[in-house]
Amino acid sequence: MRDHFWHPRHAGKLNVPGARTGTAGSRRQGTLVCFELVVQAGHVTAVGYRVFGSPYAIAGCSVMAELIVGRGADVTHVMRGRELASLLDFPTEQIGVALLIENAIKAALDNTGEADIVSTTREATNDDDYTD
Amino acid sequence: MLKRDGYTITYIEPDREGIVQPHRVADALRDDTALCSIMHVNNETGVYNDIAAIGAVTRARGVPLHVDAAQSIGKLPIDLAQLPVDLMSFTAHKIYGPKGAGVLYVRGATGGDNRKRMAPILFGGGQENGARPGTLATHQIVGLGAACELARERFERDIAHVSKLRDSLWTGLASLPGVMLNGHPRQRVCGILNVSFDGVEGESLLLAVAGLAVSAGSACNSAQREPSYVLRALGRDATLAQSSLRFSLGRFSTADEVAAAIRIVSDALASLRSISPLIA
Image (cartoon, rainbow over all chains, first blue to last red; front, side):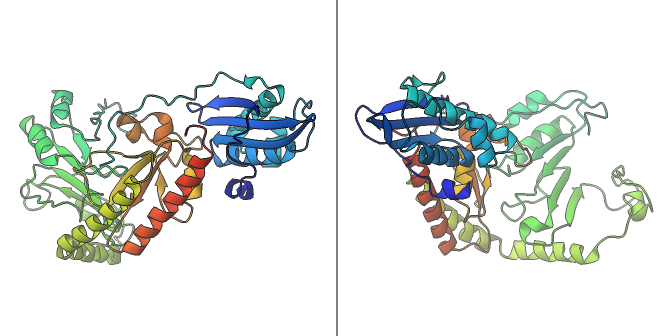
């Protein structure tokens, strides 16, 4: 888990037009995952993701990204969230994070965009910023 | 514990800068208020309350005032001959003394038959005229006394040293994107800096700065890592409250350590923000 946190594979925006996207979670939930997949000849040839979340969220996305590269795009899922949680020894309170990662990947594979109701806008915060 | 014993507790909210205003204390006092207890300095933000003004309020209403001075001893001038404070507590280890020794000052507790007496909370041998049982750790008490003497001797020097480091640290951090200072920018002690970092998640930030001994803006004794109620009271939402770090500087902190801290935080922030979907 720590290795995937400190050295996340395939992290970042792909900047490839036409990439399939899938998003799950929200800032309010504490985890927001956005996957991008490039599919060519029915296979996933490139993957990228951006993640706001715990170290488990980052590591989980990294593991999922590694698994999905080269897979057929008609696969409905790469790994179930609970399998991911078990593989990386997620604590109980982080299993929901693994499910969000599964949902985001699935949404990207299905090219449906958003897996859940997502709010990517910043929540209202204190207006006073003491960045003087 | 007081609630369990049937007492009614009134909690006073700080303002959005983390300060408990004297007028809020005045509004909260009741005819049957038995005690007002307040932190001199908030341990999370470093912001301090005007205990002279609060003490004037409580004294006018005949309510005893207890001040938790754990974070202010050695950092703010305290003259109990002037301050309208009835009880004050502090601990040795906050002024580089030994852990396990502390003080409860009780005004009027010494001298004569009319001295104030505290009801004991531990019972046994009845030492110190029944105030508490047990044998005191005299080596720790001596250490506490020595720490107080040194704190008084080095007060101006310590304040100047730590203030300079704190200003340097804040200058470095404030130059980073999405950084917010928690608490009043000036009514604060020099050695505590509590900063929120927008766009990155708190646990990941804490792990990413693993080379630093800092604490996060959350209740560390909770498995759920609840966001700090102190930061929430300042108006930070739960997510931002969790994405906060508390930096603590002291007599033995160095400029090199501050420079390293800025570099570590900067690298961690850049790394996490580069993969954050909240950053455009």
